[in-house]
Amino acid sequence: MEKHSCVGCGIKLQTSDPKALGYTTREDAQYCQRCYRIKHYGDFAPLKKHSVPSDEVFQAIAKLEGTILLVIDVTDIDSGLFTGIQRHCMNRDFIIVLTKFDLLPKTVTKQRIVGYLMSKLRDVPINVLGVATTSHQAKQGAKALVQEIKKLKIKRLITLGYANMGKSTLINAMLEKDDYLTISPYPHTTLEINQIEWAQGIIFDTPGIKIEHSFTDLFPFDELEKVQIRKAFKPKTYQLDSAQSFVLPNVGIVSVKPKDKASITLYFSDQYPIHRTKFDRLEAYCAKHEADDLYAIKARRIIQDQPIFDIVFKQLGWFYCVGDYEWIEIKTVYFDQVMQRKALI
Image 1 (tube, rainbow, N blue to C red):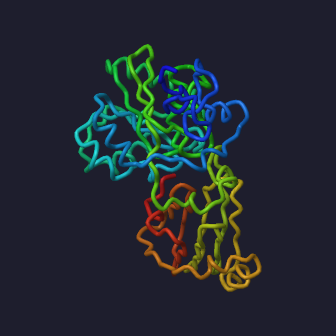
Image 2: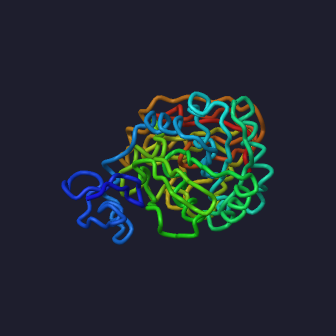
Image 3: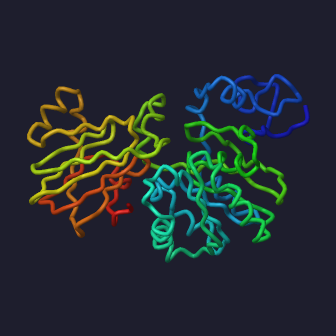
């Protein structure tokens, strides 16, 4: 058959090897069997096996001419800004799209989030042409983005972003075709650069960049959807008058001791069962729930440098902390994915 690419994931189609990527039974098929099963049967099992090395993605992007469309999940904004920009995309033109903006509390303004974003990019050698926001399904904001692209006379767009940031969902919304590219709640759906022709020129849909030491790697594949933020936040606030611990299943423990009165608000998926317990009962709780491995992880204490701040667990969510604390202790295996920041909300 003539070799052409799967519309859904960009892989080269083939009819000879059912066990290899790109297999299809029909020579005129648009989608490989993997994408077909995802689209029509919700069969995400093949996603467990395949991902694309990040260096290969960056090397391919470096050879492409065009404006980079950097896609960032606004609920995981600190993950979306990766150091590879400096190394691989220096002096390139960027449009940044913050997806899932509708999942933030209504009181959060675009100006506040964009201000935080630009402060993080202050010393990064790229040219930001604009920052756009879209809704969770990207339908709100996509038309305005397309109009801005048209206004800037951009003919070649190259999507870029970590895995599962919503690149393919965004492109579908821009094309006004809900099911054109294959999308799923799991990372690494797109396998090769997929060249798409549209009214404004060409869009290159690229595989998602893999996050090293991601907290999501600690969860069984069939539990990933539970910890991903796909609905508007339902923050949970706790008033603290004694030492407390918050157990994050599979991930770690956050323990705090307030000096006086303090509060903590949790911004995580409402399906992620974070448990609160008194600090002096933590060891017994972990033993009872077979979470001794979390209790045994080495701990690190952080310094409170402002009265209102966030403790961020990238890819998952954050703790919004208010008040004075005697100490804050974090136990986790991936300390490079935990950060403290000025309160985002």
